[in-house]
Length: 335
Figure (spheres, rainbow, N blue to C red):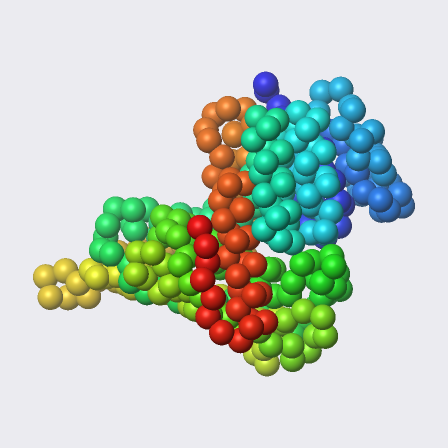
């Protein structure tokens, strides 16, 4: 196929600010339909981006001729229904993170992909940041030796602009399922997706009622490595903080900015490229690279990165995080 013909379900912030502007600039993509329960929003977004096929009924959109793939940009509570229906209709699917609210919902989506033999990708755009891809290549090249400790975090100033995120029935949880899952995925991906053996989590509700706005988690992996994660929506900070520190037997590395430190001939040397994109450019490039990758996978040019099966394992850890925080003690993560 020359162009992948895409339908987008859910035309809120992430669709309007990220997916639609990027997709209409990619020559290999064509957004042929949009769908949302809000008829007025569908009409306005359709007019803005020149999309004639506008639906409020998912099944009507899926019945369209010539639809190759679906991107799911709804609130998390709708992911399972939309993704499963799209897969059963024979469409390849990209689901925005998190794949679902729970492990059980994630497994149902992955099972539908297996049964329909369609491609399923989960939007973990931080894997596609240029700096994370460079760091991943150094780790795979054994430049840091065996990684024994990782510390990752994403701390945001107080600004809850999407109210549904704080509604448990819609989001499935708070800041951990929103930001924590991104940092969890990045750490596990960097380390080659080892198994999480056990974890200890503490969640805090400083400015929220139903869900946590701050989460601190410590993971023990089957490699013997330890990973610490801290995420928050409500820190008293001047600016957001995003970081990733990796420590190996032969070197250390960090993100924001990218540094790869290794001892060579008695001196500590930074092996990272001298020039790398800025924070905003990294964010934009991550989504551009992610969408290009999905389009290439739909066209059978390469396998999917960030698969549904990996997302199921992520959600197994997420469920354990909430279980540990509720019990107030360490819990095992069964394989």
